[in-house]
Image 1 (cartoon, helix red, strand yellow):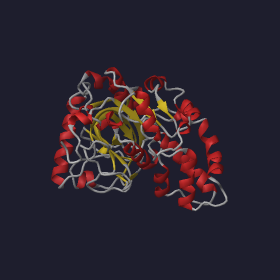
Image 2 (image 1 turned 135 degrees about the vertical axis):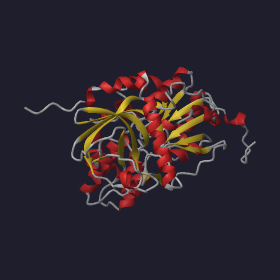
Image 3 (image 1 turned 120 degrees about the vertical axis):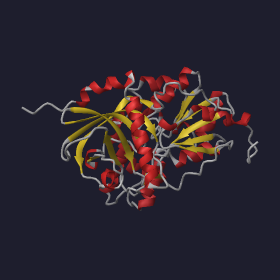
Image 4 (image 1 turned 90 degrees about the horizontal axis):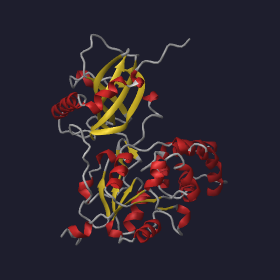
Length: 398
């Protein structure tokens, strides 16, 4: 029995309840773009605090939080909502699935684990968001929307309704959430929560997320950088069987194109590892906030394709303020290639970002990642991506 009186049998997982925005779909990037635009039209700048407070709430309540935090006067939350909604309606289909979602959903369905969706999104908007996602529509036939309960998140109404519809006690429902409001709502419902934060500060979850306690009966039990790090067996669910040489296959591959620029100079000077750096300006609309970690894949420069280990994130050892993409092309080059276009097709996830006690420990781990990359990319499942047309240079303009 744990310190909160919870036995292993009381931590049984019979169903998984998912949040939608920022957990299943990367709608947060699109929403923030539109919210920035609306807020700016009223002479304000969207602060990280306002964005985080609004995360996970129903639309009107989210706009109330934004307006109150930024002191937007002369506009009601309904007014702000009506200014933003037309900009969003025709673009919901653009929102991609977040990394690891399709894999985990398919895995749980294969093993007969009931799934449900708890979203602050109104029902009509949910239908638009999933209109071109037949796989997600089939997976989440049981859903509770923000306009179907009296109180939205952080109140527990939606989660309690789903437990009742699933015919399960709340303690047997595992929740996957990205927002502090959603974590609070599931906790209030008496459910265990795996938090995958979508709002980060320099790569770290903001202070609004509870510290995880793995063996508790309700509340946050785990805090993950992305669903690529979700290990089902840790929550009483069947383990994955699809890893290759210890790596997680990415379906589809994560594809990035950009210009090679000079970075901090640490790769070759301090670490003895000549990484390239992709221009941050090329990445603003490419990477979801949740995509961080160490990856393996293929890189092309000047029409030639090479194996690459690639770091995406803030590099905790050096405390970068901006997200960076630093591929290490596993080849010895005679000269630098600054200014050249680099194309990355990342086919496998190796591990999350980590902090290290010394540069020596960091270097050792980077070389271990390179060894994993070399071996894994020899597998048939990965080597076929070497000929991906994406890696070919674009044809010359006439």
